[in-house]
Image 1 (cartoon, rainbow, N blue to C red):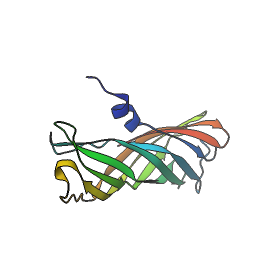
Image 2: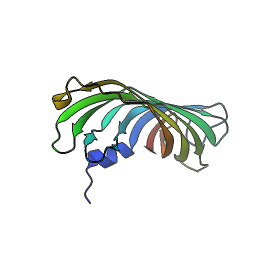
Image 3: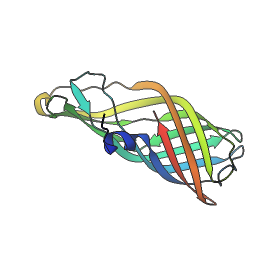
Image 4: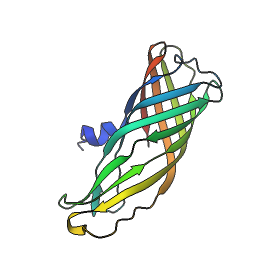
Length: 172
C-alpha cells in the first residue's frame, strides 16, 4: 500500500518551537508552552459517500507540571477548514470549520541528555461551525454535531538551547 506524505506524515507529526526550561528540569509548577502547526486528517464514517480533506493550522499547547513527571495539557488551535467532496468524483459539496480543544494528562519520562519523551491521554471536544453546502447540494442545510472522544499522544522535546526546544508530537 502506498501512502502520500500529505495524508500520512503531516497528520502524524506537529513540529513546534517552544520556550520552556531545559529538558528534564521540569519541577512542580513549571509551564511548558508550545506554539506551532498541527494537521487534522479526518476519516469519514460515511462509507464511500464523501471524503473530507486534511487541514493544517496554528496550534497552541500549554502544560502545567504537577510534579517532575505529571502534567496537564490544554491544546487550542486556530480554526481548521475542510472541504467535503463526493468520494466518487471529487465534486465539492460542502465545507466546514472546526475547533478541537483537547485536555490531556501527560507523563514525562526521566531521561538524561537533551531528549525528553512523554505520553498522554485525555478527552477531545470538537466543535463544528460555518458549515456550507455547494455544487449539487447548494442550498441544502449542513449541520455537523459536536463530538467528544478519547485522545492519546506520544512525543518528545529536543533541547537545542537552554530555553528553546523542538517538539515532535503524535496525537490521535
